[in-house]
Length: 213
Image 1 (tube, rainbow, N blue to C red):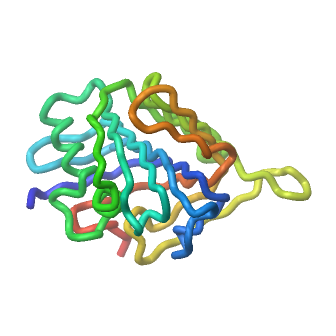
Image 2 (image 1 turned 180 degrees about the vertical axis):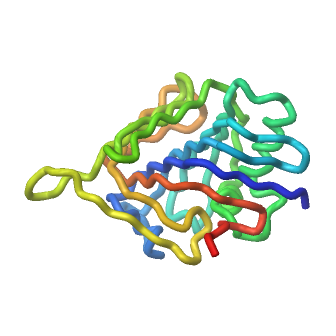
């Protein structure tokens, strides 16, 4: 396997209620799962290929829970990536060069036998950690907007974090409310309005999430 690592920021929006049952090993809110994951690599590599500064997104859709399979996925890689960088990002997002089920990329790819053609577009993330607001955009294909969860009584921002000591995506994530709109591509998300979003620092290798000592 080729050695690889990515360190950066990820924004994930799915169709479940904030908190997302998957994070607690439960079934999805309405029995199905659809999601958009967008990530920025501040520092990374795949073999000898540098991935510094690259961005990418993936759209996923499953007819049931993720672990039941039969899903589909479509990758969107920033148009500024070279051919070698695109191939490297595709390999990572397909779960190649990765220990079995060690990362969300491996899990989600394994559970998505239908893999649509990879698209290229300008992919960007704009996020304010203090305000918990921002957006993740993949050209004219899809866009996720992020805002704080509103306190059910006061309407003020409600702060929630999730720690996963044995997770395959992150060590700790901040939970928000988000919406995703899809305009083009093979996968259309139809249920992601004011639903679960988590924002996390990503520190991943082929061995899984890298945690501080």
